[in-house]
Amino acid sequence: MNWEQLLSLKRFGDTQKRPRATQDETRLGFDVDFDRIIFSSAFRSLQDKTQVIPLSETDFIHTRLTHSLEVSVVGRTLGRRVGKVLLERHPHLKEQGYTFNDFGSIVATASVMHDIGNPPFGHSGEKAIGEYFKTGKGAKYKEGLTAKEYQDLIDFEGNANGFKILTETREGISGGLRLSYATLGAFLKYPKESLPKKPTNHIVDKKYGFFQSEKTAFLEVVEDLGMKQKSEKDISFYRHPLAYLVEAADDICYTIIDFEDGINLGLIEEEFALEYMIKLVKDTIDIKKYHSLKHKTDRVSYLRALAIGVLINEAVAIFLENEEAILDGSFEKSLLDKCKYEAQINDIIKISVAKIYKSTEVVEKEVAGYKIIADLLDVFVTALNNKFNGNQSNFDSLVLNLLPEEYQLEKENLYDRILQICSYVSRMSDSYAIRMYKKLTGNII
Image (cartoon, rainbow, N blue to C red; front, top):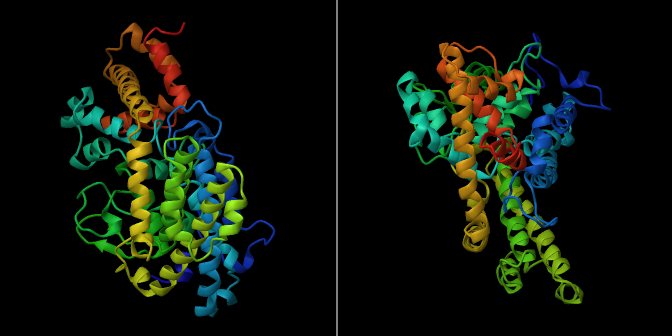
């Protein structure tokens, strides 16, 4: 892979390339990408989607929105710092007009939208959709689907759903948000289809990145970017290099900031912060300043800021040391899996899993989320299919009146009809999903 091609400013519908030198410096194409995400309805819904604690009653806790903004800030720094060195290594990029801010903008935009496809109730929402089709009432649709279509559903993936949201053509809107291909490439952490599932231990095979419905759009993006094909038998590619930085930004934020949330909520003792985070910041901490801070939130915030800084330095160094391997696809792990603080990071994650992710408050709300999502899917999928088959009931007709017009399109293919409803449910915020569930079950009139 080569950087000139990987930094493509082309968008869906373009018939020619967009040279960097012709860009308006006051609002670059990569900046336009960021703006389009911020103003999108899918991004707004993240303000009421779970990051750590579902439906938390405190105003402190992070949501998917605040998490995404923080990941974007870290991603921008990672991109700029890497970009500065890459321009020195590849001076022809500078001659064509590229700047280190371009790298920062691409990574920041891919980072701010990295969770845009996640359904309500956190990662349990993905699992709830998958299990509805694998072991729930939705399993009856298996016979009407291809193997890959069915795998898309039983392993419902927020990353693939995000690519759908970003690129899906609707009536009058071709190419979705029409983002630059460079930004879409950086967004694709898992540039493969759902089958075969985890064929290797390479990081790109951990999950999948697009539904069968977006296969054409996916191929157009990766081919324009010159992303290296991983398999000739199946649709699978090595990552766009900047996707490693997007992943690192997310890893840094959820590792450190979820830990901070747990401490401030009282789920993790403050002593753990000093015990575990000091190992990350021992070379940069000012002990006198730390002990001068009177409030727990200030002390933990100070440690968090230092820890993020340390991990940013690590991620940048590892990326630059392995640029060649990343470009040829032979770099098989995430950046933080290669850093010298891997053990400390894993220790922090273990504490977070035990004290936060498996806390009673989280588990109880995730259980409720499973029931809510399964019932919403069942009601709407049944109604849409009954309408298509000409045997809809009065209840089905009433239900479909609740469904926005853009999700009532006449689809000949069963897979497309089902995915239409999955897309609708996945875009719901936590609170909206609960309200809709109550309406459908007669608890709200």
